[in-house]
Image (cartoon, rainbow, N blue to C red; front, top):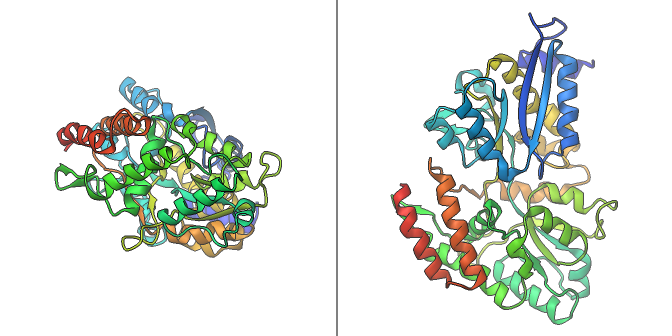
Length: 412
């Protein structure tokens, strides 16, 4: 064990060389797609087990779409469930209200407050308390195919969504691809994430006070933009059935000039073993709107927490502190960027992904949160349904959002 890792372990208060009183098995729940790969997580856990004798970790991976219900079902069953869970930034208010998560505020050193991005802390906060440690600090970036833009005579990627549409029209007119734009607009949370990014660009709000506001101003303009891009033939119509992995594969096959996606796509789209466009991938912050914003982003971060039913809270906290520590996050920074500000000047993080880190420094500062209300799952379902109706053409954007707003008024 080198001196750096030994110092890390001591600073985190982990057991070093002395076995626990009795063997402990932690059960931890993670998701399958995006951010850290299953192999990365298994490697982190293996290293943790080697450094904490007597503690083993049993991992379970589920699709993101099943993660919320898994957590709720396990919490409802009481003891004997998970010891560590991965949860989304949109859930802590609901989980705190229902008593699903342990309040770990006293466990977090005050010295960490200024070292971690403010947007990351929002992932774990509800009612003035903290219910875990942020782990995945993420937002969606605009990816572009450098080769297609060059062949289209486009010198630089777009800085506004209007510029994006103009560039996509040039690329389509020159028949470089059939559909220049690809999105994750399946009826799922991914659709709400893309909509939130555009809503932030147009200066919209989900609520003003207790009243829904997404059916006016920037919220309406965002959905109008999405609908128009389909009608003009610039967005791939299959986007309405795609999740993020479909977007990655489409872009990596060279079928699209532009794509909106999470951090993890940068490394995978540049991997020649699984991408036809490796070495041709550009990344910039999601564009803004002239006179309104210079960039757009939404908070898609995730955190690790301890369910209140866990019988091994101290050991669970040791695992969380290890996996969220700066040295571990910097070691696995190719698919998920660290929560620690200092990491963005570290060669271990920036080397080979300088453009991604440059984009992150802008995007992480303008992340718009989705509504932090206990009824967020219900609100998301309403939004997904209404957004899809507009994208499928069965309602106008105004009609779809007005209907959603009527229901959303009951949630706050």
